[in-house]
Length: 178
Image 1 (cartoon, one colour):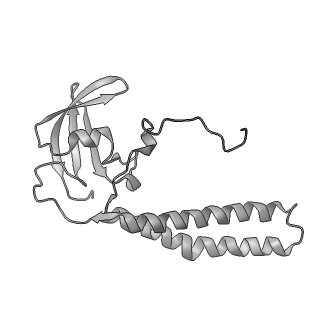
Image 2 (cartoon, rainbow, N blue to C red):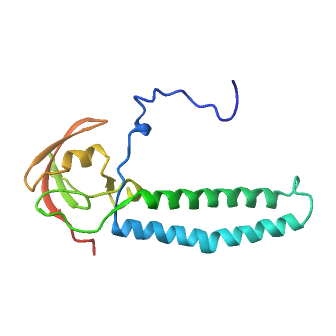
Image 3 (cartoon, rainbow, N blue to C red):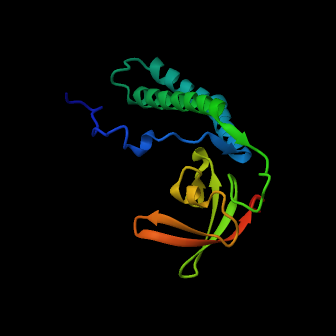
C-alpha cells in the first residue's frame, strides 16, 4: 500500500494530536478569527476566483500552470473558510473576568520567576490564539495546566525537555496589554 498519503502509524491512545482541545477563546481572539474569515470570504476568494476564470479562458487547462496554481489556491482558501466557519460555531467566547482575580484562570497575564531569578511573562489563551512571539500559551499546555488556580507567591513545577523546572508566580493581571 504505497502512496503519497501514507504516514507513520500512530497509536491513537498515545497520540498527543488526538487529545481533545478546549473550545475556549478570548473575545479578542474570536474577533480576530471573524476578521480573517470575513477577509477570506469577501476579498481573497473573489480575487482568486477571478484569476481562475481568466486562466480558464485561455484554453487548454492541462498545460496551464496559472490555472492549476490558482485552482489549488482557491481550494485552500475554501477549505480555510469552511474550517473557520465550523470552528467559530463550536468555540465558547470568554468575555468576562473570573470571580476571583487573585487566582490564575483563562485569559490571565502571568509573571513567573525561575530559580535563577529570571522572569517569564505569559498569557493563558485558547488553542486557536496561541502566539510564541507574544508568549501566549494554550490552556491545554502543560505550563498552563500547572498554573491554573495558583495565586501570587505559589510555586509550580513544570516538566520540560531539560527536566523539571520550578517557577514562582510573581504577578497576575487580567487587563489587556497596552
